Amino acid sequence: MECAFTQGIREAGLSTINGRPLLYYRKNTLLAVYIDDCILAVKEEQALKKVIEEIAKEFEITDEGDVDEYLGVEI
Image (cartoon, rainbow, N blue to C red; front, side):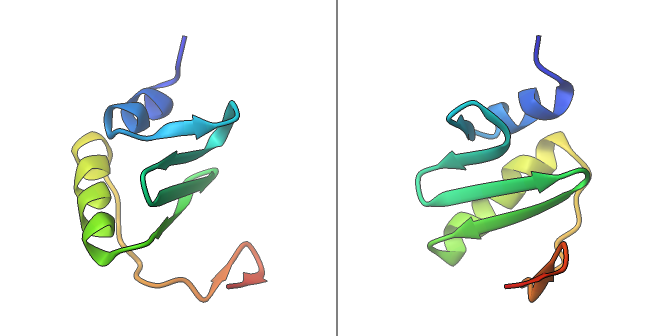
């Protein structure tokens, strides 16, 4: 049985990578999750807007813009 988060992410069209429960993908999109923070990496700006819209249908989210640092790692 999947948790609500995993089910919601799958409904947004993303799949796990090699069964890793907090790394998701779909064409030209990568979503990494750590506790309640996520990073979206996309090839095109249009794809970013689309996946944010789809995830926002399932969850309350905020867009903090571009990432310079995440979990103490400079991006």
